[in-house]
Amino acid sequence: MIVIAGVQTPEEHIHAIVETIEKEGLQAHVSRGSDRTIIGLIGSVEPKLAEHLRQMKGVENVVKISKSYKLASRDFHPENTVISINGVNIGGGELVIMGGPCAVESATQIDEIAALVKAAGAQVLRGGAFKPRTGPYSFQGTGVEGLIMMAEAGKKHDLLTITEVMTPEYVDICAEYADILQVGTRNMQNFDLLRKLGTCGKPVLLKRGFSSTYDEFLNAAEYILAGGNPNVMLCERGIRTFETYTRNTLDLSAIPVLQQLSHLPVISDPSHGTGRRELVVPMTKASVAAGADGLIIEMHTDPDNSMTGDGVQSLFPDQFADLLKDLELLAPAVGKTFHTPSTVS
Ligand code: PEP
Ligand code: MN
Image (tube, rainbow, N blue to C red):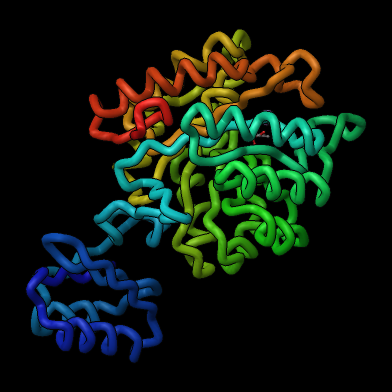
């Protein structure tokens, strides 16, 4: 349920409403918007309490919310969530580009790629140190050493870093070295991992499970939010359909749907979403046109020899740089800002 109060409602009235809710053993989440203040209630609300709240000073309305997720829903939090990390604002109208290899392979590899990612105008370096591989005999990542290599490359080239964390035990070490923690598609409903991320103190990029509905996806985000971490981004990375030409089907509708249902930033991953290099450029542009707040894109200096199978979907560095130049033109057409270094004076 939500209590709607006017934007002019004095602080003492909001405080009294929150106190009344908490006295009943329920949680109250206050969200101040430009035209109203929303107080969201979590827990089961007795009709008597709802009626009492309706009569309180400053209350304009009390509305029942039937969705199973609350903190992730736009009903609870009408304004967009903006995640600010060292001057990069995700969800705040700035198009955020995360680029880099599927996996951190060596210190030289990640350093070279970081330089190219930075020169192209991206703000975040991506790279997996712990890799979720379909088969147990495939390369599983460089682990903690990879985390350290990536943190050094990020620092050297002034880029934020994002890396995947697969188990609750590794959350703390990943949070120590990376700026953003990624939950992979295979772990979207790893509830112990999600709970642990609720208290990790770092922003989380949550990928949509490849067979998950929007409702399941938003409930997964709810676990992290309910654990006390408000900085969650939702990532559409393609779903499994009957089509086999592409690795997955990038669900472009997910971008506006998630932005309507939720206030959390929405990131698109056209690399895993298509699995084919020649589709990454058009689907990146389509994602921006559909309103994505950011993109996560694989790029490799030697994709044919990449240590994961994702070379086939990795852009070459010049393709990545040309794409970002095009985004500079496209972003303003959909109300976003994005600049490459060549145009920043
Ligand atoms: C990745 O980003 O390299 C990755 C493994 O992604 P996903 O979880 O979407 O497959
Ligand atoms: Mn990959």
